[in-house]
Length: 140
Image: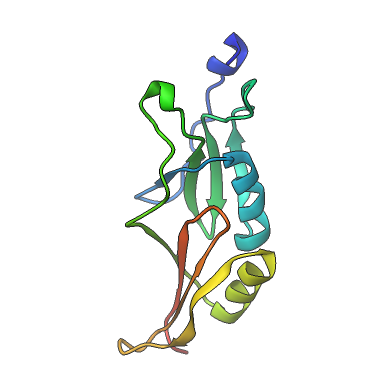
């Protein structure tokens, strides 16, 4: 990291939502670009990659909430680990459009969209970085 990068501070007031997911993903900058295609994510802030191509922070807005990403930095106690035990859930108004955009972008279907016992439409897909995404829409 350069001194300039380390002194970069995100603008105040860009965080959306009450709980913000922070994903440690190898190739975080590439993941942010993918999330733009798959989930209409907009980059609110990003620290440029270091000389190894890793970024310590990307702040995205997805569907009215903030999601943050960083590459793993094993030398600082953040080792590379496959995502597990976490599902990113998107509450959406048009599940079929959200689902199709994600699949067209390169997500792999895990559970096709269908009506669930609780009455909502629901489906799951895994992105190329190993993160599981759920799509949920109250039944119209």
